[in-house]
Image (tube, rainbow, N blue to C red; front, side, top):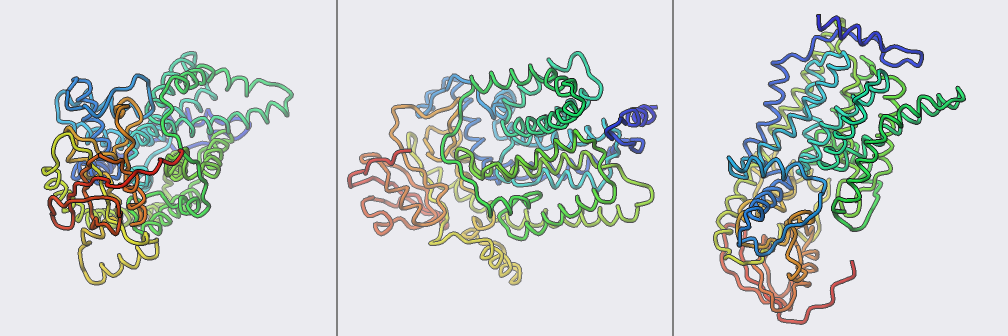
Length: 546
């Protein structure tokens, strides 16, 4: 019965502009396949606790700190609570509530799993609601889309926000075809929740709606009327008001340079399914995009002009989006997996005449997933050793300490070709990745925070610009954690204020040759990681104007 209703709904959506071509009757996504894909998506998160995603430990420190601030814990002396709403609120609210019954690391892991599963389920639900069956190739493409650079960088709020956005886009399209009286209010509430989760899904949603409005405005121009575009605008006036008000009252977030780079724009196209720094993953991403192109060519898209215009508007947003938006990195690269997923949502279901081709595509995608799983195991293995080293080092850091991290860096940052050669040499020699070279393939600048969470210390690398802020009485402190070369480390440490003693967890030898006016004393050494106390003995230059 449900199949007949969905098929009838799909056929009734045909109109004069070609919207909603007839789809095969939807039988739903096979439950077993969906369950297996979600299990495959959550296993790496459960095994690692989210610690091996770049910003995962940073989130853990903030979640734990927020719990301390709520409890008025005196050990949070370096920080104070803010008083304004902010984007990326979802992870703090979710983890704070769940931390009442489980430890914060477990709460954070649960949130990451929820975000990833919500992304997958939202895409599957949208296809089902459009009357399209979701088979294994499509499920695997969605899995690889969620395991892309946004997950690698630890943008968990953004991933959850995308799941909400997929549902919001489907509702907007359905509202245009069959208006509902409750849409204006309910969509405004969804957009408000999305805005408090992550601002980038809101940008994508706005661009998609602008594409729809453009098509409607063109139709109105030819018909010498203002009906279609006016209907779209009326259905979103409250959503626009909601987002506008939130943007006015929310914490503005980061401020800094905005930069647009052509090379990273080109490589950003191949960010789908890329979860490490390994150059080989660009090839895997190209294969995934090739599979999506093949499926589009063979099956076609069940999308009318409004949906296609929205999809093209999303692609235009990727083109114009800078690499760094007010110092927010990877602003453009994070958009590509979402745009690919929207295209996959519009894909027609499988055809009975193409069973052999679909099996071949499934086999290729399964091989890519298996290869990626092997790469993650191989490249994450040295991080376990580094994590254990940090745990031992952290025990030697006293309370009330200011902590700096000097990462493993070289004279020159290895480029993509150099990373590929290093990986090839390791694989050819059947050698594991040395801990000293783990940073070449998987960045881990915040892994130390995992063992400083809940302690009365101030790591300068922790990202704090929302509700949890540094106390205003603290001096401006350097942060060498994201340095890429030895010169970057020296430049950061050169700004250490005088008469401020810090504890430096360093992967490189600190001596007078690196920073001549810095007095350092080695406290302990575990493996290749050293703990120093450092104090400036010369005068501090004036901080550059930001």
